[in-house]
Length: 186
Image (cartoon, rainbow, N blue to C red; front, side):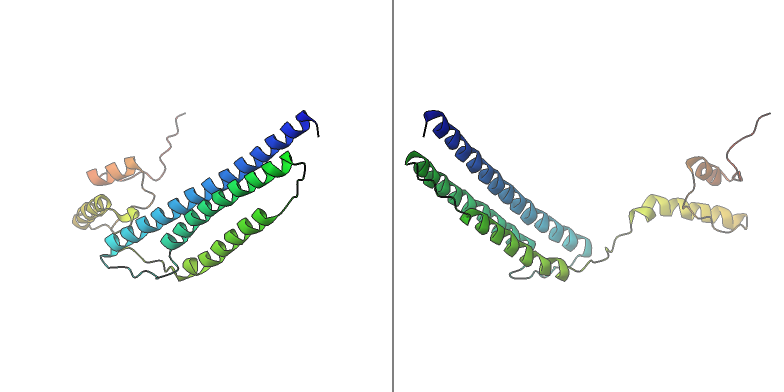
């Protein structure tokens, strides 16, 4: 094998190692994000509902996130081992391809995916006890003021959905709202 061919093979080996390294960094980052986001959601839910939320002992987003971080670390260790193995095989002109890393990574992703299904199915959406953004405190105050104004004038209570700012200002001032906001000039 010529010197240029050997360099080319070593460079391909390094690119493969870096690809496995990127994969492991992505698994570690995704595991960290999944774990922290799951913790954030459980804290948010317990704050909103004012109740302690029971967590599943084994199948939780935090445990799956930790599993992904561990899987990323294992892939780094295996990729370094494989890089060194291929390096010496290239030097001895005795390269033997193997698919061990592909099967291990695919197995880890399959196991994590299977463990994620119960977490997704067991998570029950809960309705927050606080008002939604459509009925904020300011909108309720405006609606109450409009209602009191309408009761004095014996008109039905107005609905705030779809009211423009100018229509809302006119309603607060007690002026009748125009049916068509466009003015025709001839």
